[in-house]
Image 1: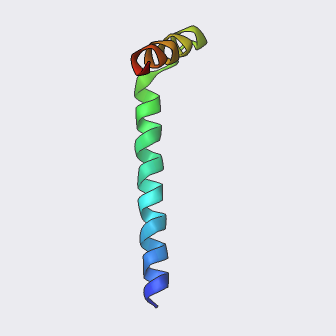
Image 2 (image 1 turned 90 degrees about the horizontal axis):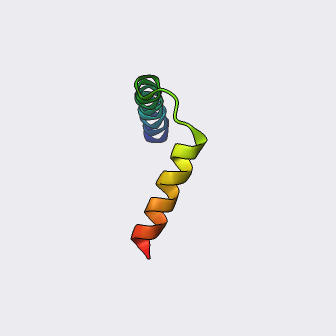
Length: 48
């Protein structure tokens, strides 16, 4: 029984996380490929 309850809780948490990420994506709008590439390059430069 405990495993069933834990699985249900994990499933609900996953659904909530997906809803949250969808909301972030909706508000953020589109990001160009060039912008993403710039972010990756900047991150790499900082990590050197």
